[in-house]
Length: 339
Ligand code: XIL
Image 1: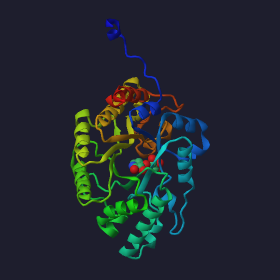
Image 2: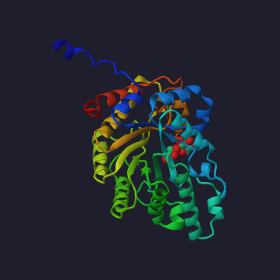
Image 3: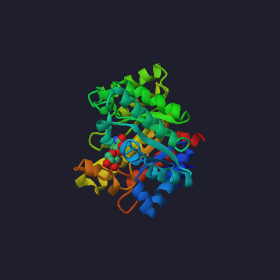
Image 4: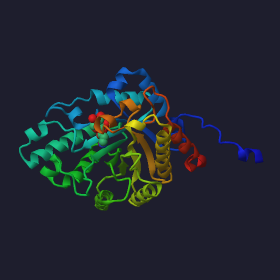
């Protein structure tokens, strides 16, 4: 008995997926439809390690609805088909956003009524198409700016802030079973943006707008990532709203020069584990999605050139310390032991 106390903990057995299943957690990953088509190792890894997928780009407005009367569902359907074949859930992403919209929206719009009709038709058509296949939607993505003001967009300009509640109402009418999220970045720590998002969601809830979840994107770099206490305070604050909470796009960026340095990789691993632990500590936290599979496939280096290597697998699909840290966190979670 005494001997056992001095032994190192046994290595954790099981994949992320099996550990997440035991902890009652949706362990997700953003998937790229082109890689899904072309790379068997990518497919195999996703089916092995994750029980949920998000379309990284394939369900965005410009991809699904490139012309006023044209919907192109093939790439999104490829993802839902893959998910179904492997018993994996799908988070839909994203119905209304200020980015990645087709140019025709601004060209075609003749009046606010027209814009309203167009947005309604898009939300209803997409949510109806994926009804029964997507268990959740990011209905409104990034509607708040960093300073806490509502973000300037074609939607805010033309429709005023009501576009937000309308989008939730339409999505709910189209798919009453889907869990509907507000999703944003930079809300993992207290500050003006978090306050504004909290106020926005509280207001929606108080008026019975059908909103069911808050998605914390979880994009962060190792230098400015929030500490444990800030993350706890944040999750506890949003839990009071009676919402489901998830990290929806986690990636933790390293300085480009540090991508292979063991100390940096360990720091990244500790941050991933901290996010997972703080999430699992909340009963209403039920999803942790990473924004891509392998480092070289991440959006980060292309968009933020001084940063990279933010994911759980390296360029050879080898597991990084962050992968193991997440498995340890899932293994140690009381949710798992309670089962
Ligand atoms: C990113 C994708 O990863 C890229 O492939 C694309 O070029 C730009 O968008 N917040 C979001 C995601 O909600 O949709 C974004 O995804 C990353 C930031």
